[in-house]
Length: 130
Image (cartoon, rainbow, N blue to C red; front, side, top):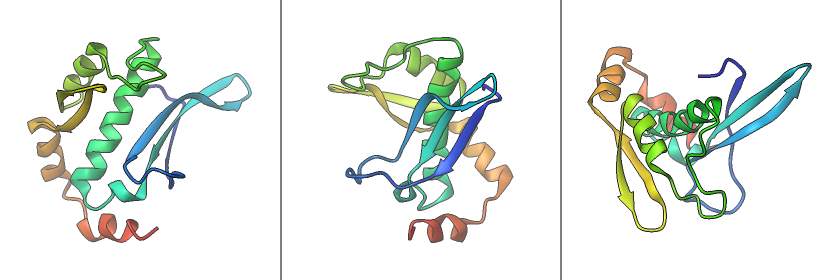
């Protein structure tokens, strides 16, 4: 992943369906143009949800590093490039009508990482109140 990436928990205006988003080169300082990942509070009910959303957005960040267009800007259709990169980061993808491979879930590698890290679940549950 690029070194100049900012990750924030923030609410989105409007859609409660939005769990997170990625924005290319939105942070500017000196000669640095950093990417931005936002995780929305409604995705933080537990560590599995939070990690799935974070990994999904990290796939977009990884692809942006290589200048891969992994979504259609108008429709948010997630391409095969997105799916292939997601698999590398431990996500499983299923294709959905109109949005391509946007539907992701944690694969075995990602679930193993959660088991090893042993996150404190009540922290994630408490964050949904914000």
